[in-house]
Amino acid sequence: MIVLKWLDDHFEELFMIIFSVVMVAVIALQVFMRYVMGASLSWSEELARFCFIWLVYLGISYGVKKQRHIKVDLVLLALKDKGKVVMNIVANLIFLAFAIFVIIYGYEIASKLLTWGQQSPALQIPMGLVYMATPIGMGLTAIRIIQQLFKQVRTLFGKEYFEVKTLQENVLADENASKKGNK
Image 1 (cartoon, rainbow, N blue to C red):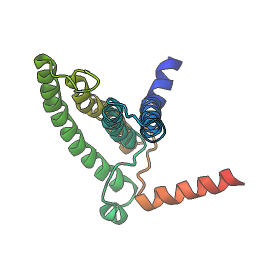
Image 2: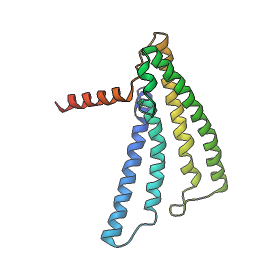
Image 3: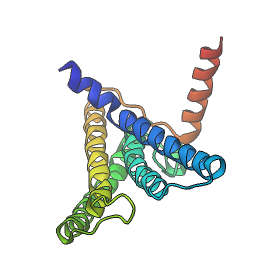
Image 4: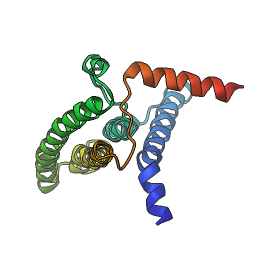
């Protein structure tokens, strides 16, 4: 149970760190090889690009988990606590519908590429695996949206506390946290 809790809390962060480290290391190696050794690597840019693609889709899920995804705060400013929660539920339901749409069609495209056997030019990685970043990342996003919706509905019934913050409130909270950490 502790492992599942840890994975729930840190899954995206773990893989985002791994993909970031691989991407930076490969790009640094390519720069070293090109400018110091006078030769370049044929596969480095491709690997960095593929890591970046996976990083983006995992980042969407992470943004949803931390409630840092793009939203328009203007309506939230005019609403009180429960109104903010209801508005967030509506927005999350729309986002969930979009995520499911992307999962379905992203999976269709990725599975066709896997069936056709198309491979990347330099690394010879099946392109279907690269394209799987879309349905997997949006699947994680859908899971995170469902988790948020669960908390929000429980908040409406008074069984849990869920606070919807505007971008400005999040920025102020981050600034206050960093000031406390610097003391």
